[in-house]
Amino acid sequence: MVIPDGYSEVPPGKLASVVTCLHMLACAPIRAERADPPWQLRRVTSPAADWYRALFARVGEEWMWFSRLTLPVTSLEAILRDPAVEVYALSAGGRDEGLLELDLREAGQCELAFFGLTHAMLGQGAGRWLMNRALELAWAHPIKRLWVHTCTLDHPNGLSFYLRSGFKPYERRIEVADDPRILGLVPRTAGPHIPIIET
Ligand SMILES: CC(C)(COP(=O)(O)OP(=O)(O)OC[C@H]1O[C@@H](n2cnc3c(N)ncnc32)[C@H](O)[C@@H]1OP(=O)(O)O)[C@@H](O)C(=O)NCCC(=O)NCCS
Image (cartoon, rainbow, N blue to C red; front, side, top):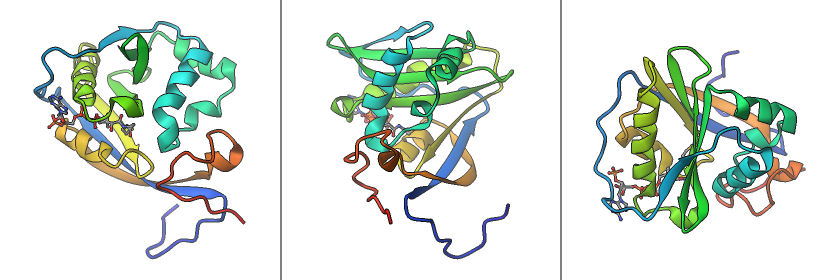
């Protein structure tokens, strides 16, 4: 379907976001990072759905990440158990405070499927440090492309952060979905930058 020029009405109860897809076709240079970071990265093999959902929510709730919250537990666990899906947690002070998920299920490429920090970790260099680890881990595989998408619901710094990381934008999409706050998937206080519109 071609989206017509001009304004398109979005029904009450729905969210619309502009999605930017970005990729890199070779590993971008690793950028300068904090020398003695007070955090570590650990791989979580076959994570339990409860643990995963809790971290996913703590990182993404503010930005209305909902895709993984609509999946039945069995479907989510099937993805997380797949050896081609790598889940990592950034932990600080004994707590998991960041999520990095690499999806290598499609041969020759990797999707940076989920990447983010909890609110408490923002603006301290942890994002850059985590991106450097993501690039090293992804490009250690025999891939030709690493891609990611971000949307206008995400942190406003996300897109410029990905551009500085060496990703090049190649496609724009419009995503329309039920507002996860109205569905009760995330609290109604989530995503205060996007007001709720309902009938
Ligand atoms: C996108 C996201 C990971 C960026 O993280 P961030 O905490 O804002 O970014 P950082 O503070 O690590 O990095 C910003 C810059 O400041 C620098 N910096 C910040 N604090 C620093 C410090 N104490 N010492 C050295 N450098 C520091 C970083 O090196 C980096 O520089 P560069 O980008 O020029 O290389 C973060 O906003 C996030 O998790 N958002 C929520 C989820 C989300 O929207 N994800 C992305 C879209 S899917």
